[in-house]
Length: 147
Image 1 (cartoon, one colour):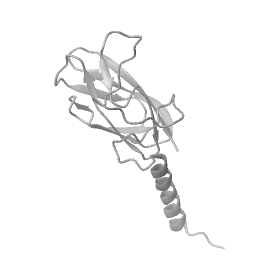
Image 2 (image 1 turned 180 degrees about the horizontal axis):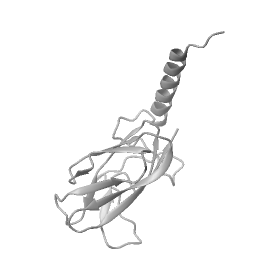
Image 3 (image 1 turned 180 degrees about the vertical axis):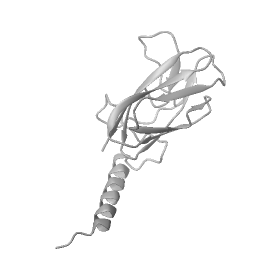
Image 4 (image 1 turned 30 degrees about the vertical axis):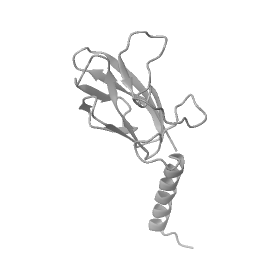
């Protein structure tokens, strides 16, 4: 019996792609294709600004993320995030990827109008930091890439 490595590679790639599509629940890229780590079910899209509200524990509003502070993304899945800060206008946000290659983020800087795309590249966990250029506030977003 001989093994055809090309067929095995194609089958593995097709299986990974199928699993990522099933895990996205048929959502389009940039939709609610991720499941927050504290939840066991999918949440419905929120009306309004589409940005997550700050924690009630902290009265001071700083950087707010449209994808939350804890993100779970499937391998090869795509997630779009936006960031804003009260009173910051069109200032620049920079993203520092501390995941050692687990995710790929593009672009690495932009304004509140910029859509930052996150790709789950390798299974694992880590975080990235969003910092504003003027006020020096920062937000750490924890990321877990799953199969």
